[in-house]
Picture 1 (cartoon, rainbow, N blue to C red):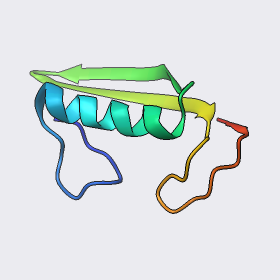
Picture 2: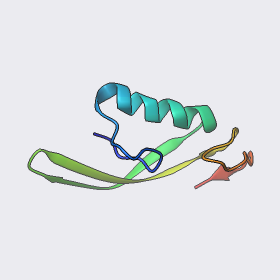
Picture 3: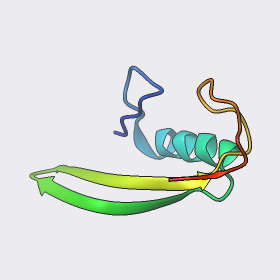
Picture 4: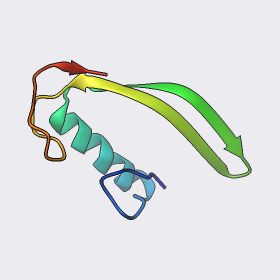
Length: 70
């Protein structure tokens, strides 16, 4: 499962994960993720990451800036 602020329900499986990636690549073609912290307990894993990229299209109501964001 993959939780995002854009969906009230978690995205599930490979298709759900690819939906998130495609959304990000559609607005920031040079998007990069950096894992900052990883925790695991039993069969659950949590990864905290930072993301950066150049916003070339509107994203969640925010107009494109063309600037690199971190």
